[in-house]
Image 1 (cartoon, rainbow, N blue to C red):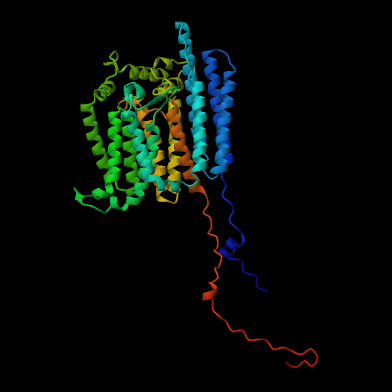
Image 2 (cartoon, rainbow, N blue to C red; image 1 turned 120 degrees about the vertical axis):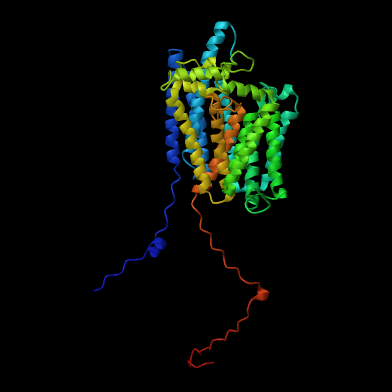
Length: 495
């Protein structure tokens, strides 16, 4: 007797439906718990080394931290269930470590103020409030932007609003916009906003939507110059005008860090869109020319270059190398293993809780701890890039790559300046530094990354079969139906 043949793979696939892909939200919750454990231990070490005792402030900060990111987790579980499970825990850990260092600097500055008879307003409670506002904005973006592709409809509007946000501080009086020589703020009663932080995200939306529409023109259209096929002027015009206007505005406002950041983002997005390295070479050439022009036109650029070359030579000059030299002394004191949380002197570096917070972390956590923090940024950027490459639409790929590279570029510019790799700029470290505008803008960035990763990891839905539509009555075919024969009830013959 012959054995029945086994069913083929196609019949198995049809009879056994494919299992639903895991959302990995449990993994995200476990990683958030691990991040909360690290942050709590860091708070304990700071207080043990600074005050030799533990106070109720640890409980307050710990509960606030857990509450805020628990809400963020359940929001992602509800509105972006397939998002990458490592992005939010990585951001939470960076934000928590920044809060620890801000609190640690607060303790030192409060003690110094007490000794001199002055008063000091702590920055850590304000940072908790900024985090709460940033997460509220994070939730709003997740709820409102249900599909990142809808942003392409507002590409040019986003570009115009972004340029207006950059221009506004420049046209305001210095009393309402200037802080430490840079006109990048809008100072209102009780609050200050840096619109450039939000403008870079709006401009990224514009650049991504523009490159999607004009991608082919960057590759084949136009004339050749030195072997490079250039786009036609009318096609390249809107983007070129936006880039030049944004960079010139930022240079006029003396915000060279944002200029460098924006230029780098645009260059990377063009490379991702065209896959042609010649655009990178051309862009770097323009960057070198711009640096030479800025050095000869602006005295503050010349001063920062002098501080970068030899901070000790300008140590006692106004606006000189004192800040950078103190940061280098702190990093040298920390060495490989660090002095320990709460056991260093990061408070003697000006702006230790904002621009130079990485110097304080490098002093107390050492090279190992600072390298671990940089690895967190690398994980965040690579997970964002991975989601951008996996998403199915070109706009999502470009926007995700731009958002991810913005994080890497920010970290490179600020850490490179603190460690004397490049001249110092005024960019804050994402999620670590004290400040509301940077935190709000970066959480919008994270929300968009989560939305893109949710679209990339979400299983493709099978199209529903369309119901068969009947033809209108006037167009319906007429069929002649023959009447069946009728049999009589008694005789059984036909009627």
